[in-house]
Structure formats: C-alpha cells, structure tokens
Length: 404
Image (tube, rainbow, N blue to C red; front, side, top):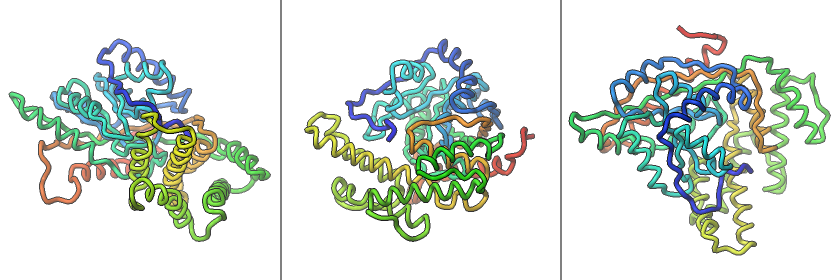
C-alpha cells in the first residue's frame, strides 16, 4: 500500500507566493518529466483561451482530468506558456514525503488539502486565490489519480462550490469581477514499440507468479491472464476461493466483500455507488482516533489492516472491466501494465517515450448562486462534457504530431 494516508495531526501547508524559485524550478521541469515519467515532449492546444481570461483579469479555475501523477507538472509548463504561474491544491500526504519535496511543492505554488476530513483552511485559501485573480488555480475534480486516460471518473461538486464562493466575492467589487472555469483535457500518447516496452515487464510479473514467460503470446492475452491470476489471488485471500462470473461481476463482488463489513462497522450500514466516495467515507471514520493517539497497539494495527483493505478496494476500482475489450490502444495497454507494477511493487517506473498534449476548453462563467430545483450541478455537467469531448477528439488524432 502506498503511503497515501497519514496518521498524524493535520497541519495546513500554504503555498509560497514568491516567484524566483518557481521560475527556476519550471526550467528544470522538462528534464524531470523525461527522467521520472518518460515524458519526452509537451504540447498545448487552444492555450489562447486561457491567456484571454488571464489578461482580462478574471479569477481563473482550471479543472483537468487526472490520469497520471505528472499531470500537475505538465500544467506548470502551461503556466509558463501564458506567463502566469499556477496554484495547485494537492493531497497533504505529498507534503509528508520529506522536507525537500515539501519545499519544492510550496515554491511551485502548491498547497495542501486534507482528504480525510473538512479542511476549511485549504478551502479558504483556494477561494481567496480565485477571488484575488492574481494566479490561476488548478483543482483536479476527480480527486484521485485514475491511470485511465480514456475514462473520466466521478467529479466532485465541491470544485464548483469553491468557484461560486469566489464569484460572490468578486461580484461585490467595483466594477464587478468574474470567475471562469476552463476545463482542461490532458492526453498522453505512447510513441514507442509497445511490445518491446511491455515484454520484459510482463515476463517479470509472470516469473513472480511462478510462470514461465511467454514472449510469443499476444500481449493482450498475457495482460488478461496476469490480471485474472492477480484477481484470483486476492479472491483466495479475502473470500477463500476464486469466484465465478465475468470480470465486472468478480471485481464488484470483491470490492463489496471488502468494503461492506467495514461500512457496517464504521458507517452503520453498507453503502453503494462510487467506490472513491465510499473509500473516503471509511477513511474519514477510521482515522481520527489514530491521529489522536488514543489507541493501543493492537487496535492501531487492526485499523491499519482495515485501511489497507480500503486501499485495495480503490485500486480494484481502477481496473475498468471493458478497458481492453474495445478500442484498445498502446496507451491502454501501457496504463494497465503500469498499474500492475504499481500495485505489486508500490513503485512507478517510467516507460518512455510518452508525449503529453493538454487542450484548454472554452471559458465557463461561474454564477454567484446556484439555480434552484435542478438535480446535480449544471456547471459541473458542462465541465465534464467539455473534458470528455476534448479527450475523445485528442484520442482520434493519436497518430498526429501536430494539430491545426
């Protein structure tokens, strides 16, 4: 389990407002992206839309999809393109990975948010950044990294609540100011030999399963069989035996088998729906006593095991059952194998060459108040529509090196 949960009292980490180190670190980003994430080039489309909003003095909120850990770094380079650095809200656990990483994040304009509870300081900080309109703000409405570039997951409506709060502040200015949202679609393209790149990785996983590597078998078949084996191992561990049914049934059954008893204990009953939300609710319930230090070692160990199960359920959720059944691209194959690697080793290994393309959507003005009597938030609906449309159009041009 990756260290995404911290059992220490939360302390808000504000962003640095100075620009000297931000500019220097931005110069270093392309090298970092190559070495740590295999990103050999970055291209921005329709960035003039963002530049127009920035130059008009609007409070600007960027809402990108979030499929890879390097997404914020790609966006920092977009800030360089419009000559205005960004602020980014990021999970607190990233600031707990060492003093140097914490310093770098702050200098780049990143501030923390506590995902396992209400973080009023972070919300105030985000709202004030938008109200001041000095620098654009980046919020990832999916909330977590999916590693599925072709699938946009459930989006948190809290994103628009922050924007509306800032819009109310700017509406009181003389003259009144505006807050706009620019959806952003980030798409990665693998430009190498997918067979040569994935073959040694798959061979290593096959050996770890005590299998003889099968380099002559189709790569899709090897991925499917490894995935089935890893799922069966977890079913044996958690349910006592491999389960029957199709992949969607087995994944859903294992997730519910893991989460339902914990929800009965901590949330007074089994929940349904989005697994990410279910996981967040469980973490929010399990962690407070651990943070307070009021538990003996046996109980603390029991809760860490429960948190590991919660993490497992969320990781299972990131394997869409139909992801490799249709419209299979090199990127989908790569994402699936990278997730195997990450889940087995807790390490993220770069597999170059990857090309990043980020497209800026049309500005969506944020009203100070929400329309009554409408189910769901229409603004978030428009954000989602734009991102999905841009991702689909980018995918259709995966063989192109440039766009008109």
